[in-house]
Amino acid sequence: MKNSGKCPKCQKTLPFIQFEEILIRNGEELFDTGVSLFCPYCQTILSTSLYTDRTADDILFNVKKIVEEVSDVLSEVQSVRDDVESLRSVLSVAASEKHLIPAHKARKKKKK
Image (cartoon, rainbow, N blue to C red):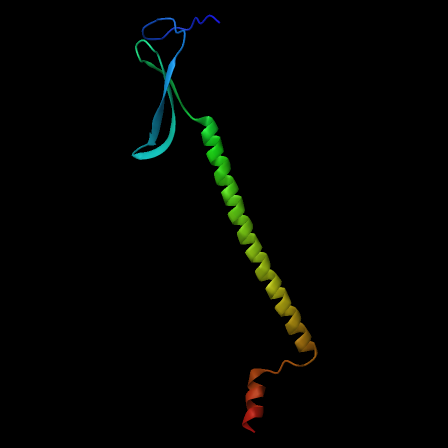
């Protein structure tokens, strides 16, 4: 494979390029890591990039974590709904059988 690409600064033909890991910042905060591609002769930076595979893996990991947390919350909500529905059924049966006595009437009966 013959390479004919040239460095834009030193104009040497590049049979290969060099790379190194770099830190990418957003202002003062560390944003991510990436790579810097540079000329092996004059060290002119030819390109920089995020580690796209790692970035995609990080995003997938975080999405899975969020989905698990949402699933846990939804399970808890469903459990509470089931409990409320059970209480409604019990109260409905009790009211229909007239077992439910208002609190103020129960107090009056005790005083007699």
